[in-house]
Length: 148
Image (tube, rainbow, N blue to C red):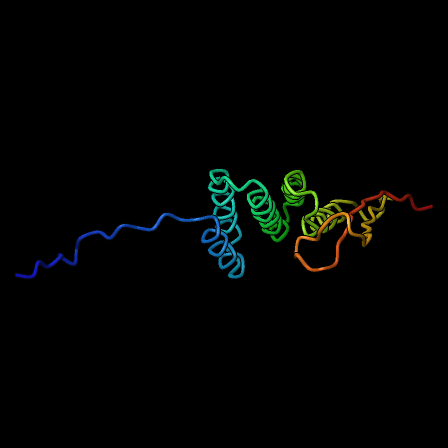
């Protein structure tokens, strides 16, 4: 005798992983749902805190925080974007994308007549890696230059 499972039985939902939450956040970002994307990325940060792979965890958290910053850039929340990029860089100081986004957000915050200009310099060498994992290595240096 074959036992049938009723169709209305709830199926066990798979627990989300940081990777699935990131993918979901990326889809929401692409469709313009920035607040939904922020929620996914922040949940991914929390779940990443439960992993034991410290270096990989730091890279993931930095990406999630920089993605939150990208959402805030799209909605004009530049101060929040700067904050999340800074947090990403505190976790993974070699994440160039976070540094570039932070510079872009700071540029949006500065009035046109501000004489201060933040300059982003990427110096290629073998000391640090770029986030993309390409063969080129980058050491990131941010300076503030005064215009006359």
